[in-house]
Image 1: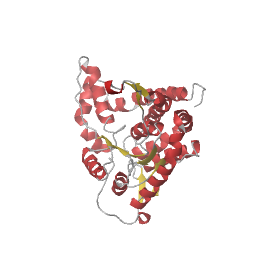
Image 2: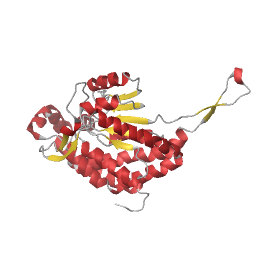
Image 3: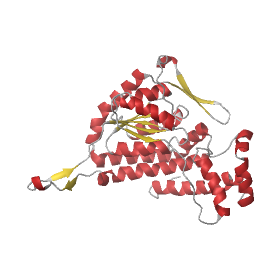
Image 4: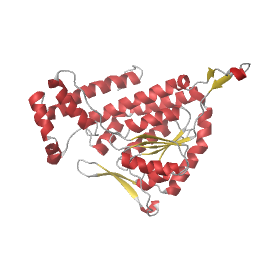
Length: 331
């Protein structure tokens, strides 16, 4: 969850966000927490860079974003290690997240010109002797507020498409996963040093509120419905357009083969809640009923969440990394 708070807080120089490993609560890294003035400054810098980025056109942005993709792919295992440590996922689950995310960036950068190209449309009877077309212009600066459970995959959906369309991005990650966001920003700076259009602001609820109120041209938020309502209220102050993914639960319909479905239903329920593993006795007790069903109807619950999935994910990740490198054999 990414929190947002309306209450005032001390100056950002006196506050910091500490990234911790949820498995043992050990500190990973500490970052200064961005206050309203800090956020405003970053948004202003991103806006100044946005015009040049938009002027690159689709071909120029594709070249730059493909370089960013390659930079991330080259360091995929390093990024996966950061994600693993911040979220508690196993390294292979984290690597799969990285690889799947790169397909977002790859497709968006290669297909933005097709999706957003100016198109001719009927001019209407009253203007039959005129030509009409519809085109799309970048918003300018898009704020993205991301969740903790998929700190790369989820926000990069919004980031990939918005930046490919010519927008600058200011990304506020969850306060639980700042190191992942900082890694991504550093990779962008290495790959695209001439365009400061991907910026990260670290912080908690105050920072999220400041970004929503900063005058960005659009906001994309992923988190809980409760927090989404607060983000909506903050955006409403400036009539800032907002896209919300607030989660939820859907029914699962099993047409046949209950034995096979039970195990995967249990895993899906856990995985979609952001957990690649269940840590500690309390967590296991919470799923004791599901475990007993899985043991009776399918393979042991714990095995399903560990060995088989790990092997399958790692194999898939390795194949996809190879493909994203253009089949050149990089590993």
